[in-house]
Image 1: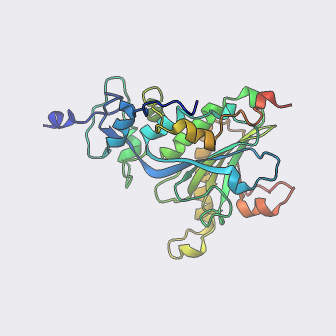
Image 2: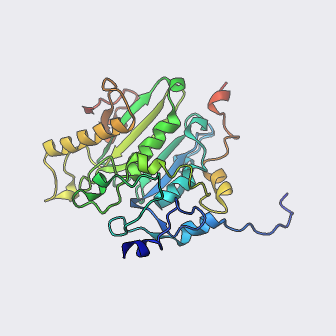
Image 3: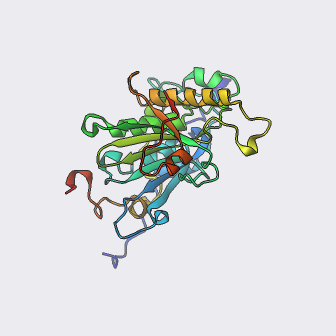
Length: 220
Length: 96
């Protein structure tokens, strides 16, 4: 019967020292960290460090429970949680046609950045940000800055079909719809009020805008 | 302190369990979670083509106080190399 078969399955809830099954994630994820620059002309490659990769719920919590909380990081630090194989940089082939949804929390003292970042990571690894065929979410990021915290969600496209996607590409309207849906779910995961807008911009727009702020393409 | 000879620390039971545990087949393994533990949101997993690897926030948060093992025996030194211990750079509170 079912019950006798089930007695061989021990989850971490049954016995944290002797469980024999773990909960698989849909994707393999890598956590990255950007160290604050030392001011001695260090290059970006030395500042961006791969911390660890994981593919189960249990591993995620082992890491989360043993890593510096965002609220204790130095200014100019970032955590990046990206699908394994994607570097959290605009230049990565999988990012260069993409963009990001982002929200800036300017009242640093009045928000719980640790809870917000945790909830966004859970939405990412639990696959609540996109539907299975969307193939848009590349990763999520938190930036610690002097005047604000910013949480972002990077997408593979800006709503347009990519050169390699012939045949299965979405129309521009469909592409925009997928991005807006993801933006709304991102906003939900941050528990923002309806009046607080998350903004989307393409990476190349940001790169070329220089000191002027990139114009948001979409708002959710 | 580097000269001390100490027994190499052994992995904890929880670390070993994580390493040897097999992946649950979320769709095929009928699991009975202990009383008081919520199952993954069935609405997320039964819908359409999902491989049963979607989890809602409330399900995932239940693990927070249950699994606290470090990812590896050398985690502290690895963390120091990557994230640092905060001592070499100003923390937000101590910014000049």
